[in-house]
Image (cartoon, rainbow, N blue to C red; front, side):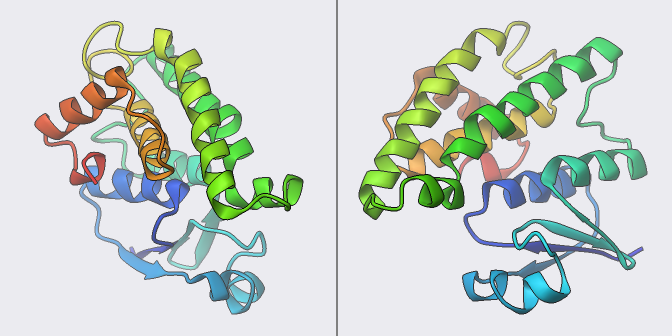
Length: 198
């Protein structure tokens, strides 16, 4: 079995998949995709959507981080990232869906460029940070109700989605959010991955 992940430095969605691959202890190859590749041969030959990540598993190609992660979870269910009970899985998916669609998508660079092409780069960063902070505030009451993990008592995909979107807030220059800072530190102390630290 050969797992190849087409990824890009700074891609929030790619980082989600990389984190799962590392956490599950899978052997995989990372292929860096440049900005030039996205609009050229990569889109023509690898992923017609023209973005990352893209998983290639022995010739079977799959895009979209959530679809890729669910595929990996079915192939390699242990250690699980989608919970151990039907209610845990539902809550984890609820959190991940909110992060992916409500928080991440509107602040995505390509979306913002399409709707607000007049904004300078720094203005876009401020707007992206403000949106992430606002929507993380909406999400916060649902998190960490039973432990330092986002949902339940175990590490899950919810932790990955929350930590990576919070990292994006920090990268855009947003003010630190105490509860989310504590979550990052908690994950680091649990040795989940260095990705929560960077």
